[in-house]
Length: 372
Image 1 (cartoon, rainbow, N blue to C red):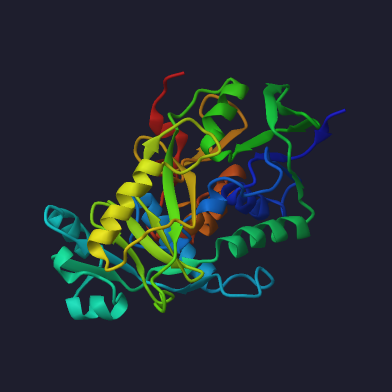
Image 2 (cartoon, rainbow, N blue to C red):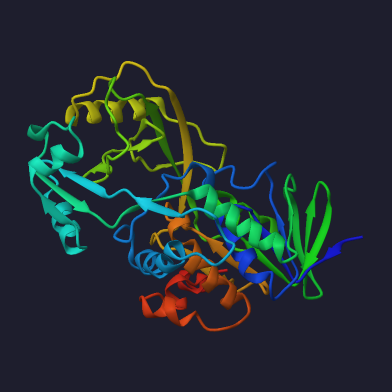
């Protein structure tokens, strides 16, 4: 016998967990996660930053609209701050002046080389021509955010089933039936929050895909020079996103900031890209790296215009997309989940989100045209 719910959410990463938490007070919701634990893929491998000046227009609007939640989370959501000061520093060298102009337009402030050295004493000033800073960028405690949404979901009676990969999805009589290795589940609405696998879920349902492209990003962890405290360093990146680095638990994370198209999979680091990032890092820093502590990879999934896809599919009744967040899923999660929950319930976008410049039309799957 199938178990019946009002809404099935496929995927328990930040997208699925947050929208399920928003919906559970109004509906009976089940979250089906293919891995043994939630947040195994992109959510658990995030760069963990809240940067209101980073991303395309709808991402910027959703990030701004999420700020109040992060700074003043609901009672009981967490016992510790979700954000902490970090800052974001942009290093500009010859050939990237256009990126610097764009950064200034977004509000980044040019700072002197003396201030750069005060922030990061190991920097080589001769390697850059200009430095710009976003003082409002902050660290996000990704685990606290993700677990806060899951706790809220469970407290309201929601059900999370891990190790439940959906292997079949069909609609009959106004109801979607999801087949998993542990049984079947039914609901009139299915929310596709499967991250890099969202197009694969659509194929199971016989729904047209949205051209979602997972892109790999690699990272490595290295030790700083002996006696150097890196805890106060800002997240620092090369103009044009050639590489970036930030402190993590007394170490330095370095990433080539690549976006290599791949199929959805359990991502690993690209050793060649890591080597290129280390070379760039050493060009800018008085820090010779002889050993990598750890490397890893993650997937960031995009559609062609770089904006998220949120809304009911125009050709498949009850099939709701919540995908394509790219590398911005954590920092937009409060506003995006609030918006998605409203749209699932056939309501208007929340007024506070619209006030920041977001619109349902700009993130709707309808924007991809009428092709079947």
